[in-house]
Image (cartoon, rainbow, N blue to C red):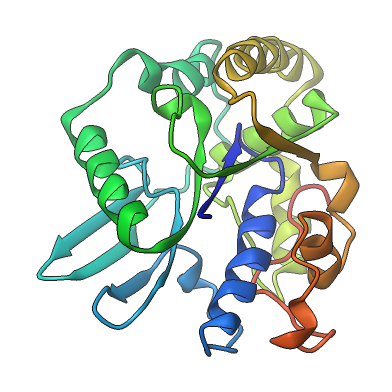
Length: 253
């Protein structure tokens, strides 16, 4: 059964997605780690592959997609870094709620495409739950959440302020350099209030049949340990114990 990873931002969902994606690709014969760019950028020839990995596919504001003649291509839209700029009250509210209030034609087309893919292929999809209507697909759902809402909010602030949402191997110095753009305590208080409100809406949309895991439970785990946490215990048939993914801990490192 296909899998959908739901999240509310800065909860470790990309790490989980990449661990699972590595497993499913290896099961299909692709045992490569993948590049940092491959987190978002993929090309699927549907006549040749059964497995499809879709990261944030249902969010046109983040991912552009071309689906033509049996080939599905996804790419990340360019993000402009706004470093050191303080975001005023209300901007986090817009990030969390605006897409709920407007179900665009582009999102409807993406969901129609997903419906077609789910009928014919095995799909691993990850997307922020608040960006689309309540999901009703017959799939296995995994909700990735975070116990510390304040830490989550700080991570989101840093990501939006610096333009850096993910980091690859060798980016440790960059992470430490950019942490200086963290919010003042009063700003963090205001942002955390909006984040807590977003979680209330999130839980109202969350499917009843859904596995829930928290970032704090796996953020320090090896990729194979993450797979075991979600029940993929036969990883050793396709991967070595030392297998890796092209991402590193960022603001919480």
